[in-house]
Amino acid sequence: MIVADKDKCTGCGLCVEICHEHCIALVDDTVRINYELCSTCTQCIAVCPQQAISWDGVPPVAYDETRLPSPEQLDELFKERRTIRFFKEDKIDRTLLEEIVGYGIYAPTNNYDLRAVVVDDEEIIVELEQPILRFITRMYNLVYKPKIVFNLVRRITPALDPKDKVKIEEAIERGRTLGSIPAAVVFIVGDRRIALSEASAQYALYNMILYAQAKGIGSCLRGTGQLLLDRFGTARRCLGLRKHEHILGTLMLGYPGVRFANKVEGKTLDIQWNDG
View (cartoon, rainbow, N blue to C red):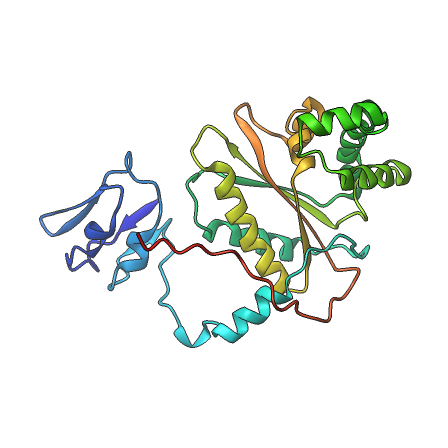
């Protein structure tokens, strides 16, 4: 909960001006917060020059600009990041996992009720793989294996990629969809009925990805698996999902089994300038 300390507050009104929920007011030079309207965006805490507003009794700390990364350091970080699909067998200490996952809360969000379910038990990770493998095996036998069906479906659904056929065949042969078992899997769950919930989950995961990278932990976002697990009752029960909760994002973590040495230069994003 956001709380204002009336003894520290000078009544400057900056928190009132910045509040986009219009839930803060100055009454007799004292901050009043309408908690029914408050979304806990914490902008008020960040802007207060007197550090008079806090979160759950934890006082804010002023920024230390000397510790901010330079553009050159960010360039190195972004271009060093690669998706890791092969992990070492080493476990990640839960203290470090908690630290990595904790940075998800600082990401931009529209859903303030997201939570993380972390699985770091290899047996459970492998168990959660089984319904996914059974599903893609059925899909392979029905759609990918018969050439006539595959070509027909491709005409109807251009998104059906021939490259997926090779990946599925390899997964079926090795008995799992994962190249190797990660040390941990993080599921971001929440109510999909809240606008931009999936986007909010991906923002949270990207925070975790970058912090994990800085700690020497590799990561891989996973899309297809989460869509399937979200629909399997046994998987939902295993993850302890509540009635209106859905899996909004999935991240695999582990110590990298391969070391990348080079930054890939020259990649560009198509930009269109709209000058009217």
